Length: 403
Image (cartoon, rainbow, N blue to C red):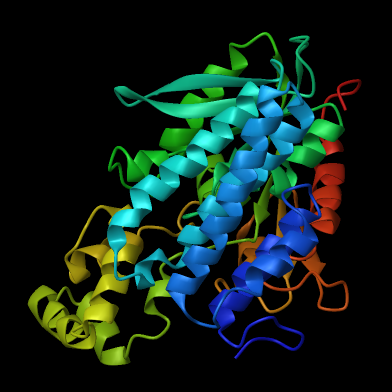
């Protein structure tokens, strides 16, 4: 069931609806448009969700194209940004769709709209390719203007399924309003790196963040002494893991604090299956899981969720995801870390406080409450409260004269 005041009885639908409403507060779409789109959704029905959001996105994309043709860059940017995010929103329940073939074309429609946002920025937003492990990562340096002046830069690590446009609502737009840069990119297992290149996640995010910072510090429009970091959702794990090894950022934020990603996978496993994992009983574990996901819909959900980890065998997937924890490395973190801790955290309950207790160095934890309208994972309807507080905190660590 949804929380009091929810828009849907289905908890996942309700949460995604809250995210869409919160993004509107940061300029992504409109509150009325979100509500009108949600009115066309049948509670708990993935197909109606997909149809409603793709229809809204297509209308916005057409509006953006018309505005771009007339030279109205601000309007084109707004419409294409919302369209890009709404195409991404349409895919939130793609694991429940009978026709999985829509995933890649829908992603590409959204990415095309995002590229048009970049085109409409009049040089403020810059496409880059970050050298990484024999290939490149697609990145975008979002700048408040096109002067090329060196600026503080917020380096943003996305979550497991978040879109690039959504990051504007998760702090990038606020950073730009303060005269900072924001850097967004697709890392291994994220968005284009997964959908188009088939590259899976990796637990050792320092191997990703270090090349990103190597690239940024060489740019004249990035102040190398004023780098900050932010990780949202599963990115809260990744940013924490990375700063155990990479210390060039003056401060970072984990939204929320995440100690162990595997907890979201193992929370509902019977103890007998946990024991099989612990003792390395591969065949027995796979046999038991095979029974648990014998229903075609359950098998499809498991396959969808496993895909970013690059594995299909249940034992291998669970063994891999258990590497995604920071208990072994948190003690070596020296970068000041702000941990966000919302009421009703549904994915990493208790972990923000656990992370705070593990850290040996400079740290702070900020709670967000239901009374503020900022409860639930990543504060979906409290984003401006979140963005302003975290950027105020980060600004306190910038070198004098750069904030």
